[in-house]
Length: 407
Ligand code: ADP
Ligand code: ASP
Ligand code: MG
Image (cartoon, helix red, strand yellow):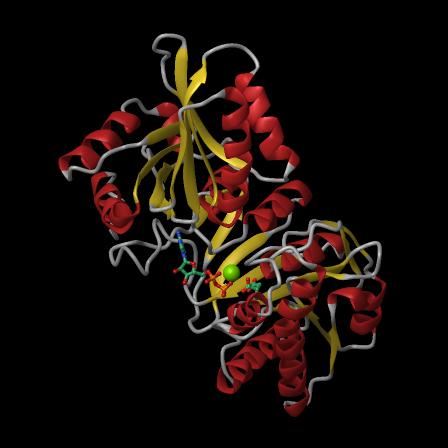
């Protein structure tokens, strides 16, 4: 007998019929004599609908009230799945985040889990029931509902799996595993049997939304046995695991391509090229809890230079206001921004052992006349900022250039 956490995403929970199908998957695991804890997302599109209502009323993404509103989709779907299970003769215990209880910090809209009490989960399991937890939500120290950032039910599932020391955490979604690129964009993309944690962290942070990045960080930290599988088809799925000594890295160069259209860039032009300027700009940005991703500084001409950096689109307005304030103090020439950019990335642990990945990437992009605005690299990834309109094209041509197509 094993202890399994299963997580079902929005498409999987998207209709009454699909929830019945999900119940079937849960029951199958239970019939295999396992203890099962299920984490569910809101029905497909529901979180967007709720967020839209909150926004129309004037709510902001990081408001207490907005979290109250957008967390309700998961309440509905956990109730619906529990009824579906009962209809099939399997009793379930539906639990909201605060009933579990999943404690988080107070950063509404992107809260971090600080603790999970396993008592109510264990009590439910001990009575032979299936525990069904509403994903995406927690409670802060003041008793307010928080949400964990878009895609956050993945993180609920992995964090719960870590807290109860589950034997496995299966993330069920609308694709049958992690692919060499988003299969909706690259028809030739193939399923990967294995993705290494280092790669999955990069993929998630560079736009492959199949797993929320924090879920991967949790799984890595607590050594959760993590799989991505399809709700609608049988199959082995993809295992996310640690890179062992036995792996042969010689053949692999790049294992996947990802793109991200959620960032925007800001340039501050004509600032003095002297110590302390970058510190001045970025300390003000970070004081506003805005995360800066890429940064480049031009060479200086007549003692002046330009600085360009990227932030999430949802922080753009705030970041521009702050940068305008600093620009005034520094007597800068101008502040300009562009939200029609995409970050395109190639990822693979094998890049450590290969030369020429960057030059291949740059020449593939240049052949299509795609201009590179910014570049950032690490041992296992190269990212370029390009015009957003080329994101899908760039993904496809890089996928082909690195021979990632289905065998
Ligand atoms: P869920 O609602 O189940 O959480 P998501 O929509 O969050 O599902 O994530 C699954 C989607 O992620 C897929 O439909 C696919 O389009 C997208 N995706 C992007 N990159 C990848 C990738 N490399 N492998 C698999 N899916 C990917
Ligand atoms: N329902 C939330 C969202 O749409 C959480 C999730 O699906 O994981 O972001
Ligand atoms: Mg998701």
